[in-house]
Image 1: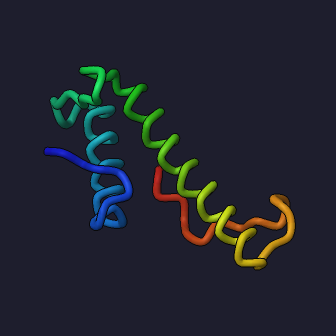
Image 2: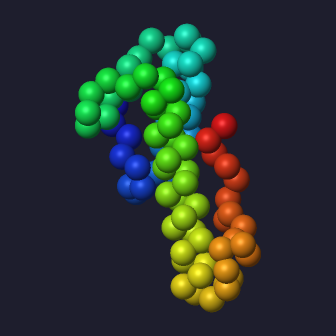
Image 3: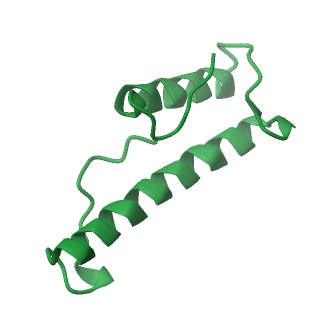
Length: 85
């Protein structure tokens, strides 16, 4: 299975990614996550998930700044719930 970040079905697939990571962490699912460098530890997978969320938040903040919805970074409020848990 391949999950491409920020592609057409990202809103649904990101939840699947977290569900798989939780099941791998709990020992319920015996899979290995692989990135372009090869197999990852489960900690590495959680790190990727956190990184992807950070990219989403950064993008949301920059959009808000560009559109004039906020004037400073301190005014930023995420547009959605944290899906990484």
